[in-house]
Image (cartoon, rainbow, N blue to C red; front, side):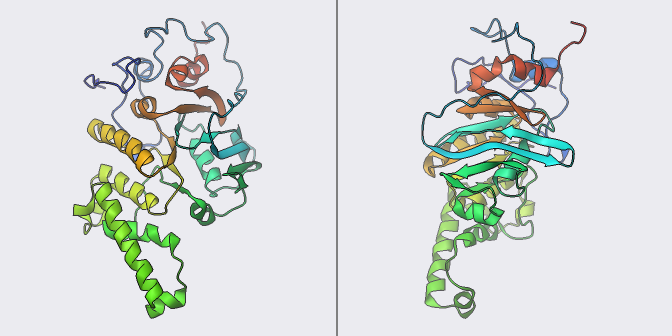
Length: 330
C-alpha cells in the first residue's frame, strides 16, 4: 500500500504523516486488513512530539470495562443511556453511553464487527434496545419507529448507499422533502391549492439543496449512474431534505479516493455550520476522523473503551491494543 503525499493537516499539532488506506469499497465490509505499521501511522502514533509514552502505557488493558462518559460542556441534544443490544446469547452492544452536544462533530470508531452500526440502528429506531434508553432533546425516543424519529429531527445515511437508483438525482431529493408534507392524501390527489403551494416549496428546496451540494447540473441523471463520491453527496442531500437537527453518517468516506475524501471532509464541516447541524458519524478513514471530530468514541466488542479528542485517542493504550492486539509472549 503506497503512502499518500503529505498535505497540511487542520490541526498543526498533529504530524503531517497521519495517513491511511485511501478507501474501501462498500461491499468490502468495515475495515481492510492492513499492516501494523500502517495502522500505527494512521491513528496510533506514539512517537510524535509530546507523545513519547502513551498515557497508561504501564497499565495492562485487561477486560472491556466501559469508560465513564465525560460531563457535557454544552447543550446536550442526543444521549443514549446505557443502551444494550442482545441477539440471543450474543451481546452486540453493551451499555453504550453517548453525550452528543449541539453543533459537535463526533465520531465512533473501532475494529470491524465492534457494534458501531448496531448502535446507530438503536438510535434511529431500526432496533429497539434490549436495555437502556435513548434521549433526544430530553424526550425518550426509545420506542419510536424510524419514520417518527426522522420527523423529530434525526436523519441518517448508510454504509451501503441506499438511493433510488432508477430515479433521477432530483427525484431522490424531492422524496426526502415529502416527510414534511402536511397536506392530506385527498388534497394531494385533487391537486388543491394548499398541496400545490407545498409542492412548489419542496421543489424550490430541492433545487437549492442540489445546487448547494454541487449536483444541480446532474439533476436529470439516474442516481445509479453517478460516480460513487457523488452518490454519497446525493444521499447526504436527501437526508438534509428531511430538515434534521442531527445527521448520522455511516462510513461516509468508504470507497472514496483521496481527493473525494478531502472534499467530503470539508463538505461535512460546511454543512454542519450552514445547516446548524450536530453530526455523529461512523468512519474508518482516520484522516477524516482525526481532522474533523470534536470528540471520538472507540468501540471494541460492543463496549466503549475510550473517549476523547484526537490527541487523547491517538495516545490511548486501550485503543492501541484494540487495533493492534498484544503479543502474548511479551
